[in-house]
Length: 177
Ligand code: NI
Image 1 (cartoon, rainbow, N blue to C red):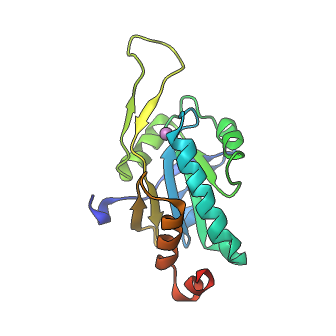
Image 2 (image 1 turned 30 degrees about the horizontal axis):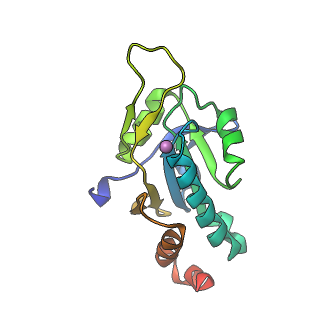
């Protein structure tokens, strides 16, 4: 994956139904994860890791909220309403901001992050009980909106915590030593 080509501006809706864009998070380090609330096990596992990272980094700095923002972006706007994402994220960490949007908006955001989504729904079926197969990465984006790193399914919370901390400005990094 080419570093320069991952990430970029987005316009989505938060769990209160409010329109938000990447500009609203300018100046913060973002931890971005794409998934969906009906995901049977991968997304819960990754969101648990994202919660552990959030808690570990947040516990060590009072001003954490001004520095780092975890985001969960739904790739299933047909089922993931703002209210459903809000209640889903309560099982994880309240600091994770949930985002969704129109199918076109979600697709545009996923494309910028090179997130691939495949519906495993039988094309002939009208069932609402479908699974989406999707790429699994937590992305670290810098305060300038530029890509820094990504973490695959094989990375533990401990690995991600250390790696994210290593990219923070020196005056912040010392708090994690
Ligand atoms: Ni998933």
